[in-house]
Amino acid sequence: MEELDLKELFTIFWYKKLQILLIILISVIAGIVYSYFFVVPKYKSSTKLVLVQSSSTVENNGNSAITQTDLTLNSKLVSTYSVIMESDSLVRQVVQELDIEGISEGNIKNNISVQSVKDTDVIEITVQNKNPNYAAQIANKIAEVFSEKIVEIYNISNIYILDRAEPDSVPSNVNHVKDITIFAFLGIVVSVIFVLVSNMLDTTIKTEEDIEKCSGLLVLSSIPNYGTELNKRRGGRGA
Image 1 (cartoon, rainbow, N blue to C red):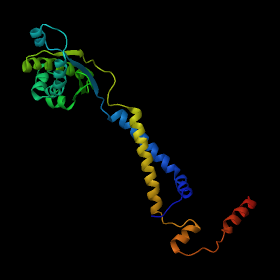
Image 2: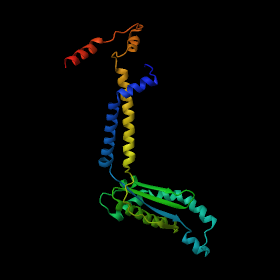
Image 3: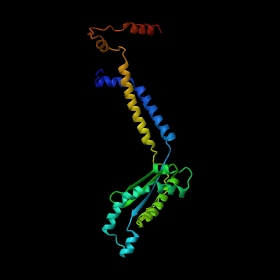
């Protein structure tokens, strides 16, 4: 590959500036079309659960204060609870109780996110759906069914629903500025590649330097094209 100095590289890009602008413009238009017409809006709703002292502990000890043992137990249960929330049996019960058309077990499992808030006993359940109301309903139903499951499995009641999910009017996966910026950047990259490749494939001789590169011979002199200039002058006189 031939080495290009900065001046020659700038000249090449300047010569191809219209093509570059056209490619970037097409990319931006493609980004606008994609962002506004092809991205399906999806909405997220979250509910938060907090692990508290179990009712069985209160009954046995007669003391409502949270002990260090309770905190240690809760921190260990966070990971276990997260797995239970995404279990097939729980999701199946959520689907049956909601009875929403188009909502299946696979749909919920693929669009649910369960995570613990760092250094706390709070678990956040986030559900994503094309319908904001469905997203909130699913998240709240998971929290309710999960609380019932914990009582059945562990015979303790240590789940408190801190925040119930509410419908969000703003899509979580739509960012027009970001999408258009990405497409514009791709347009710049494509235009740069286009200019470099087209320059590599261009074997036409335009300058004395091109003759020297192709023939390996030194150009001693050049003959100016006076004929063209003379014709222009004669034509101007006759006008």
